[in-house]
Image 1 (spheres, rainbow, N blue to C red):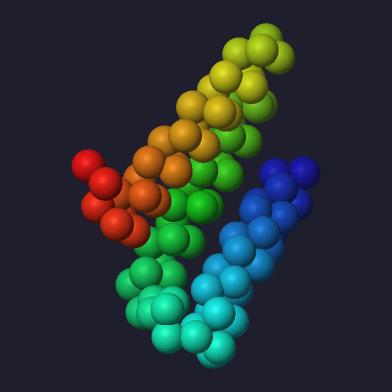
Image 2: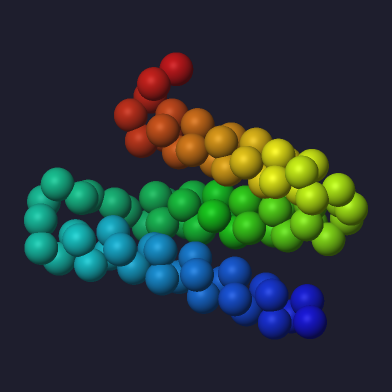
Length: 87
């Protein structure tokens, strides 16, 4: 079961990373290099694994939601900082 979840995570991350890859073919506004793709992949996989870990270990449903929302908020903050340097 864990291998199936990991394959699903990898597939979703790959599909999400295809968005900027395809956009780069049509516009000069998106200009990623290999390091950008690696960092984005690590962030997305780490987020998915952290949420999955929380969902497996925490029993309280409200706490599960709160932890996953906090993890996603952290992802968005890191992503925004890396993208435009908000902080």
